[in-house]
Image (tube, rainbow, N blue to C red; front, side):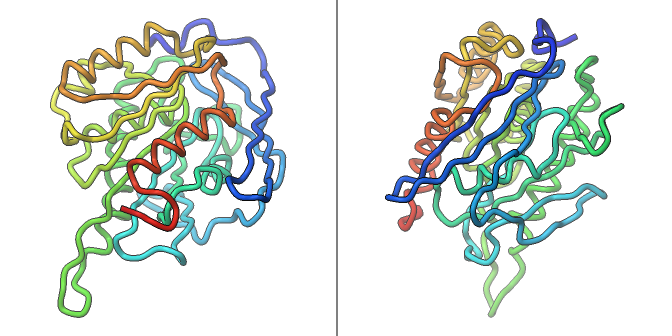
Length: 282
């Protein structure tokens, strides 16, 4: 079993995720969190104003929710957001607004694996075996997802060829593991990688021949009280990234295996520096 599978809490724990707009109006959303095995589950329990997917796209038979397509231009960044174990893309929808980043095309894929005895739930790899084959299949699926939304607009328009959209890939728990795995090995226009409560299960394999430029912005968010992804996992991952020539940024919080208002603000600030603030994209 991989390191992230040890000492998972027994039964669900509930967390409240409250956040507010950076303007005068306040918006609050609430999420319940449950940790099962090597990953987490996020359940949306409160409504978030204006949040609904524009469309659904199926790649390799798996659903991707798409948001922001009406407000983006042909060169707007693609932000791929990956859910954790035992949930679906639907539960990451609130992040699209909470991140408060420039006009982007948000893509939220479902994990390609079904979860036994959890109808409708999805995963990126088996939480007990941490199968490398599962990880690689999910990685290759995410390559196709990123290609579809980044390069799908590269056909000639009015006599000119458009450049691929830059891609940000981010995720929570199993989704964070896959954001590192897929983002660092993607041959396309990767702009940034964000890992929220994630790690590298096989750093020697993930970093064998990374394709992402060494200047790629990388953020790792870690809870010092996380019983699933422990401090050792984080340090091993940071060491592997630095050894390969990357310059990851680590932000630690006194919390468990979850998403909080503080971590969302940290990711938002990071992505605004990478992409530019709202109204002034890079």
